[in-house]
Amino acid sequence: MAKTAQIDVKDQDLLGALRGFFMAVLDQDEISAILVPWRLPMKNRVMPTLITDPARLDGADPLSPAFPMNGAKVVSRLTRKASGGKIAVVLRPCEIRAFIELVKLKQGRTEDLVIIGIDCLGAYRNTDYFNWVGEDIGASTKAFYTRVLSGKGAAMDGIDLAPACQACEFPVADGADVSVGLFGMDTDSRVLVQARTQAGEMLFLNLRLSETEEPPERKKAVDALVAERIAFRDRMFTETHAATDSLEKLTGYLANCINCYNCRVACPVCYCRECVFLTDVFDHEPSQYLRWADRKGVVKMPTDTVFYHLTRLAHMSTACVGCGQCTNACPNDIPVMELFRTIAHRTQKGFDYEAGRSLDEKPPLSEFREDEFDEVVGIG
Amino acid sequence: MTDFEPTIIAFVCNWCTYTAADLAGTSRLTYPKNVRMVRVMCTGMVDPQYVIKALLEGADGVLVSGCHPGDCHYINGNFKARRRIKLLKEILPQFGFEPERLRLTWIGASDGIQFAEIMRELVAQLKTLGPSEAKLKMVI
Ligand code: SF4
Ligand code: SF4
Ligand code: FES
Image (cartoon, each protein chain N blue to C red):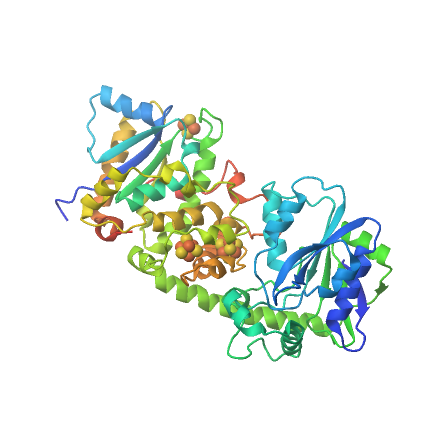
């Protein structure tokens, strides 16, 4: 059972209470640095930032609806070898799930790491956020979380959460060492802190938090949110499937694609160091293009567009966490996340696997059993 | 569709199915010439990407075929292949590829007769199914 405590919120300053909590974490002897979403001093933007100076935590902003990148990639960089210190990282649930996938692929380590996850209020699409945030980032963040936490939804000023967030059924950071609960809490007075692992419990002890019970309203609030998300997600699956259920439709869906491969760069679980599509294999001979064109009289350039997306689906869809960064990164407005999540849902189900659920489950393509999937063998 | 001749790309492992094909040949068994064989050392080296490429290039069917369970010369390559085929069978039908266009079989080195039979059966199935959408419509 998770150990549960609370952090008091003073003067209705939720963000201030969270910053205070981060400061207390960084203040621990064993913690050398903390990675948090942080307001850049030179521009109204929020970026993951590694902080060692507690005073700089006054710019920490884990509640803003900015989600410029999936932080799992940064944490992977920070942990691929021992850094000589222990780091705390503040992540969204989908970042934690992506990181868990990377750890399984040996591209990150959980040693010397404490993962702090906060109930995710969701995020706007990058471009929406840029247009919306305005000069006073503090006021924008506050307006956002106040609205969401009062149950009025995240739609504001004509924009709404990114489709990835609206379809996300994992708003609670189950995979964190320590999770911070906001939903179903009176966040003007207190938030919940739960230790979910041994590393979490250690931190918990050292912070001398006052233990408490999880209020029953919390589960109700979370369940209701999850139900809403699943309904949205399933509508998305149905619509996306209808838009791509033939090769002709799929090519239409991807018609804007210019093979820039931004989607795979933004994807936290596209794990190859070098993508095969960027190697000599795809540096075709000029004469090859002519032969391709000759066969049907036409060949669209650049070539290999559908090939790229289908290959990526085969290589990583079992690890897709639905974070939506692929859609964020696409310069030509292709709903990439919608396609990948729809297919990933099938591939993960096919192997009874869920990306980011547990460190103990091996990625489906890295193991096998002798007695399985007989239905795919034979020509009957 | 009577004069439609399907193209089948078959990824066959060196030690079992390729040997079986060889045996079929030396035993003077006949099988349709629709099959283009790609000899690989083991089915465990067939990346899903190869299968996707073949289908997008207009193959009407793809066959991956290797040693029976327990007989793989690299111990477990065929079990890995089976997972990859399972994966592709979750993905490709979503985009309208008929599941029959992708097949996995175990054909041992001494199964020359069975090899010829399976090729005949595959061709017959694909003739009924007709040409693949990729062949007809793919421009990108
Ligand atoms: S494919 Fe897209 S939604 Fe899935 S993990 Fe990668 S970036 Fe996130
Ligand atoms: S980011 Fe968009 S345009 Fe670029 S490769 Fe991905 S889908 Fe194509
Ligand atoms: S050697 Fe034949 S399947 Fe592995």
